[in-house]
Image (tube, rainbow, N blue to C red; front, side, top):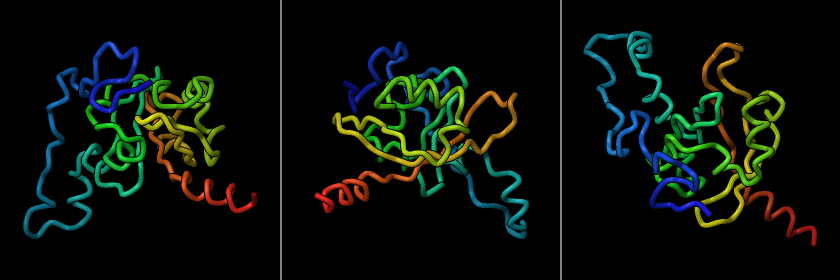
Length: 162
């Protein structure tokens, strides 16, 4: 079972950050622009990681080999882990079923808009709708997906019918 304080089981990096460090490196925060800059100027200079972090929905970037490159705060909150513990860990440690995790990597488009089950750090299932990858080229070295947490809604629906 995953540990919220450290890395996921079988993770040789033990929750290391994207740079292989102990995870203490933080995302660089920059001002939103210089005086007189247009919104387009600011957008053009905005680092991708900062943009992903600012998304209000759970977002996950992973390499094609299943290593999580980045999870934003909303994703970390949804699954109960520290962001630093997610970066560098293997995707099967988060998906509740390994076949779904492997399928997600090879055929993200096939799982788009389907409900997947993720494992919360406390052991319970998080049911979420996974988006299609925002990066659509076959030669993109990573997959970028967002999630809509459906856990509470589906639990209520299932228990109202009984």
